[in-house]
Image 1: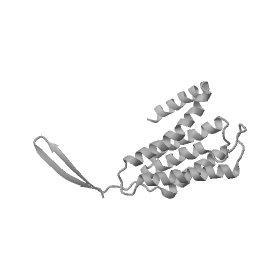
Image 2: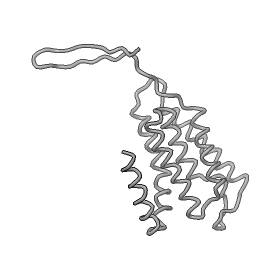
Image 3: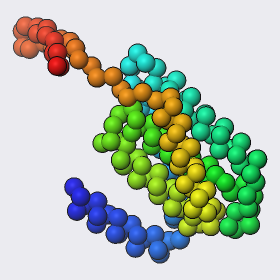
Length: 176
């Protein structure tokens, strides 16, 4: 799996260099796609600890802090625009990635963090933000998730029901 990922990354970087706008557009898409994936998984997660509420609280706090700081600090962007600090794109991406990691573990969280890091890279690459803007956005996104998100509870007891040919099977599993 790792050699395939390495080859894909090398091919992507060659393609990226040929398509400069592709980096910025990809970052624009991922800053929405990552938290959308986090929201989607929270909706399908039928745990009793309300994962949707956890996601919404975390995401809204991260955006409120980011946009509040943008207005208070009003740092100029590298391209001359306003409201550079902190990066909203990066906050959004890392908020979604941190939710996925904290709630469902590193198997899902590591790829999400990799994609969120690409969003941060895309903002610096496009001259929309400085590195510290991106770092601050990442910290805000991660911090808000760590305030509100709980790991998915391990289900110790599960029941099942199945029909096998002409008979029925009822059982349960208990994980120690």
